[in-house]
Image 1 (spheres, helix red, strand yellow):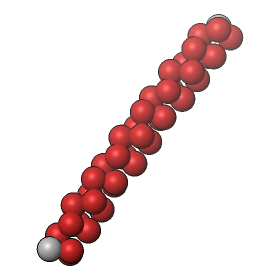
Image 2 (cartoon, rainbow, N blue to C red):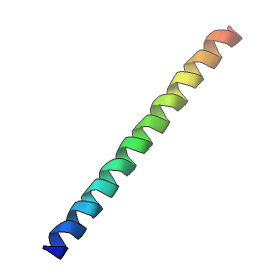
Image 3 (cartoon, rainbow, N blue to C red):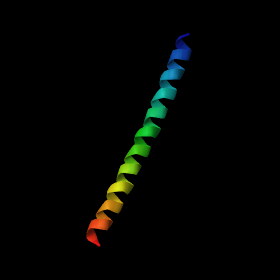
Length: 40
């Protein structure tokens, strides 16, 4: 039971990390293209 809970915590943590990284990359691309559009 305890091991299952720990496994779920690790899986949830890694999933949250992946979502956070994807969100950061999306924001970076968005601002990058927005800045290029302003500069042109």
